[in-house]
Length: 177
Image (cartoon, rainbow, N blue to C red; front, top):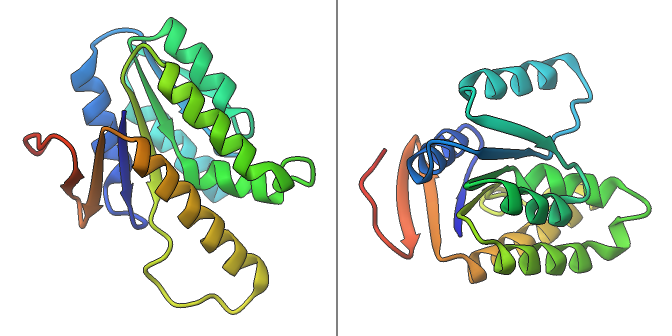
């Protein structure tokens, strides 16, 4: 399992896609967690979709990511999850899911452990900035930091992207894509 983490516009999604495409030329599954709430976000989703060739099957899993990973790993040769940041946001903003974020994260880790194919996960590093001024933003930063730590702890490889440059911080060093 590979975990690609970085700041906004750091190149993490593009790098994760290259890692996934290097792992398999067929039966690639892209798990999207975004719920586009406005036109700009819809344009971002369309750009990501257009970046993928016909060997990708897209599954939308804004909340039930653990189940989607399990199903995708059974049917795909490689799974790319983009991204944990939006998934965590969706959980945090869901009255039903919010109290159970730790349980969802445990279920995701279990699904990753059972996966029979490579899984690449993308997430934002949100803790390098200033302390947010409002309670919800601080809660998000703290919860996201915990989710990232838990995924990084079980990942075989962790890649941090900075200014479009992938830096391996855990696991096997691979050539830059």
